[in-house]
Length: 396
Ligand SMILES: Cc1ncc(COP(=O)(O)O)c(C=O)c1O
Image (cartoon, rainbow, N blue to C red):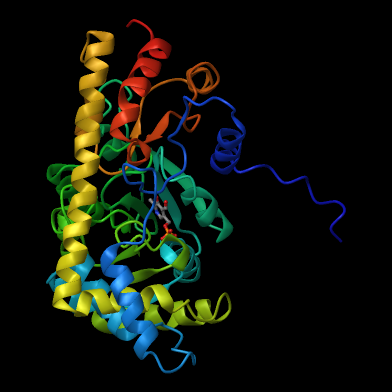
C-alpha cells in the first residue's frame, strides 16, 4: 500500500533550522522559523499564562470531554477579542479549533459543503499553508496581486483590479493584520475599498487573524476586519492564540462565521461541528482554558495586555534599529520600508539566490522567498545582520 508513495519533501522552514543547528560558525542568526523570541532568543511562557496555568492546575477537577464546539466561555471571549462590540456579533457563531490552522481547514471544508464551485482568492504572496489547506478541502485557489515589489507596500489598485474577477460564489482570503510573509498591511482605505467590492461582486471575505496585538495594538489591529464584517452580509474568520498568548503548541484558536441572519450562522455552526466530529471530534482544552482564565480575570488580563504591548514595542524598536543600521551600512534609505511593515515578518526583496548567499556566506538564515522574522533578532545581532544584508544586496 505504501511502497509507491513518493519520498516526502522536507519542509523548507524546518530544514532551514536543522541546517542552522548544524552550522559550526559562531556568528550566525536564524531568522527563519515563525515564532516570537525575546532578546535572549527564547520563546517564554507569558507571565499571565503561567499564573493561569497554576490556578487551573490547582482547581481543575476533571479531564472529561468538554464538547464539540470546545469551551463556550472561551468562544465568547474570543468573539469579543476579535469583533469587539461589533453589531456583527449578533449574527455570528463560533467554535473552538485546534489553532487557526484547524479553523482554516474547518472553514475550508464548510465552504466546500456550502458552495462546491467556490474559488478561494489568496494574496500573492501569502502564508505558506493557505493554498495547501484550501486545496486539501478540494477548493480551487486563485491569486490576487497584493505586494508591490517596488514600494514594498500593498498594491491596493492591483489587488482591487484582480478581485473584480471574484464572483458571488467565491471567497477572498485576507490577512486581518501583520501580513505573513510580507509585513505589508492594508490601510483603512484599502479595507473600505475591498468591502465595497465585496458588496458589489458578492464574494465572501474570509479573514485570517493570527497576530492580533502585534501590529499597532489589540484594538487597532482589528479595525479593518471589524469594519468589513459589519458591512458585508456574510464572512468567515479564523483566529489564532499561538502568537498573542504564546500558546503555539497548545493548538488554540477559533473559527467564526458571520451570517446574513443569526439563524444562518447557527446552521453554519452545525455544519462545522459535523465536520469537526469527522475530523478531530473535539479541540484540545488546555490552551483555551488558559485564555478563558486570562480574559475573565481583570488582574491577569492587565498583565497579559502589558506583556503583549511589550512584545509589540520590541518588534517596533527592532525594526527601527535595523533600518538605522542599514542606513549606516548602505548609505541609502532603500530598506526604510522595514519600519513601515507590521508584525513579525518582512519581505526583504532579495532573490532566492541572494538568500542562499546570505546563509552560506554570512550565516544569516532566512526563508528563500526573502522573508525574515524580525522577532528572532536581538539588539546585539543587528549590526551583524545589517552588514550581511548590505553586502549581499549590493549597490542599487
Ligand atoms: C497567517 C497565519 N494564519 C494561520 C497560522 C496558523 O496558526 P496556528 O498556530 O494558530 O495554527 C499562522 C501561523 O504562523 C499564520 O501565520
